[in-house]
Image (cartoon, rainbow, N blue to C red):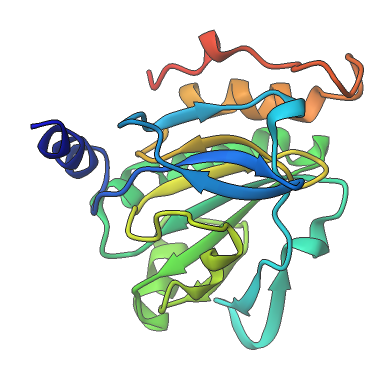
Length: 207
């Protein structure tokens, strides 16, 4: 019964199901089942780092995009596909986060999965998306997030300026739900000491 309930929640929250939870394992990101939750938040002392994430740019097959290209920036990873209705619904919300917080050192970075380049390119053009995406039809790029449920689309992972996991959304996001969390993470180390959370889970409704 419990297994069926978790599976149903996954189907309701995205195009395909899967759940996980980020924990620190020797300072690196790892993933453990969160008991059906789809939105997870971590204070700085609970976070694990993500390293080695890279892949071919959607816009240019001859260019590599690397997480390390955004050193010192908050990175909002969004896993999406042009075939995924919730991805279409949240596209303008992610663009709004980029437009609002880009000048505060925030970068949205898409990871396009199980797609073809033409369809994904049309998606980017039609929705006026200006942030870059990695073209990852096989889903291998997300192996850099150890144990992350790659079947979950859409999914959004907020990385702090040290590229440690600060928040995970295993569901469609909205600007109202995502923007306050990303703003809080961007402010860490500026308004608080590194060991303080600088974020509030109460502001993370989906709206």
